[in-house]
Length: 291
Image (tube, helix red, strand yellow):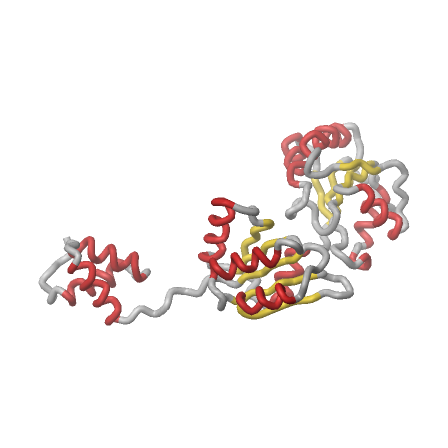
């Protein structure tokens, strides 16, 4: 880096292209050129990226991936303490977002080492904004567990989410995940699947979740990770006085007290307890008082 004081020792998270090399920022190139050490999820891929950017590797590459991140984090902390500036890149996108890097950052923060970031490409943000679904509030689920109770719990949470949900999936599991999402959320939930982001064959499939799942299933397997964006759960349907009264009659007929009947109706129909109690009063002729 030129035109200023020497860069301070630090860990620098450098976002790299998710497909299109043109998305590598000039600042990212400067940081990679100036770093004393370049830690990379896959040194082969990073070597190719550096070559394309005209940045010599010069023996600076060090592998830091999911299987060795904890151990390598200690070495990188020592390198920074020794006065080195360490750039970290994952295979694509922003390190730490469903990629290695999170443990490395935490180790540096806990050790009191400076941590900086060169922002840039992110499949999460790119897919969210291109999906057409509300982006003011959202939750990121990363990759779902592959099976079992953990997967079922996450699917249930997505089904009940009151914001847009974004998740990643591999090409050979995306059809099964979309089928599970359709089962959990229903076929009419708005959704989008984004594939080959920033590449020549970038594709966005939008529509009701059932139709999106069918379209992706017919499309055959694509390369690279997919990003699935699912709309928020619909709000509770309008509850009529008649439906409240019917629910109150059912609860009272089952032998519930007025208080317990109101609680049961409130839970069943998702209405305030005061409104449920009013329905109980109507059904019982107004002769019951709160107490």
